[in-house]
Length: 211
Image (cartoon, rainbow, N blue to C red; front, side, top):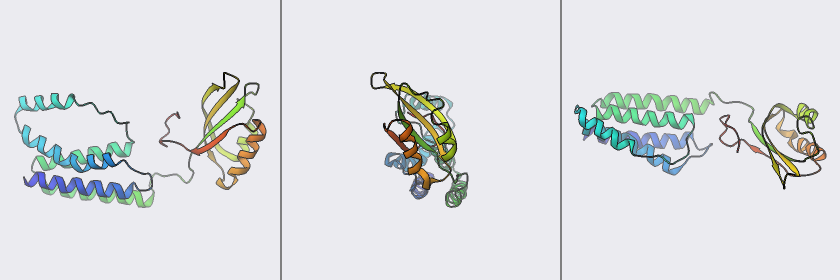
């Protein structure tokens, strides 16, 4: 019972710290609830299984039936889940002191990484969507404008729209100077005949292909 009780406290602390370090990026409430409960659940499973091999395989089969329907999380989210599971595992095995020390150490590292912005970039990727008429060569029509305002650009997707009379181009790019964004869009409007242009942050900015 001591191991499960400590696992509950550890889960609540992990969930609380995660909400603090994720305020800027946002977080899912159900994920926070899951983090709070996960260490205690893992500890209880370990206590139930014990050293009984047959019971362990039965438990594994039962958990294999669970199908997670949520969208895959980021690498940080996956790491936090494994961290919570490891803490619960230590509590379930009776290593309560180790579990507490391990949790404190990892949480301190997470807070330091969050405060210092470790691994971050001073430039943020943008998603740029441009609609152009079908008679424009989308491979070269914006080259000089991109060279003037962008430090990096990648054409991620091309699709036809408006019954095939137009193309919608999706780029992933970085601005040389965010203060020139209006001038950049104005010059693009001149090239694409004042058709739709959308610019914003990249969804799930982990380098994944845009929708």
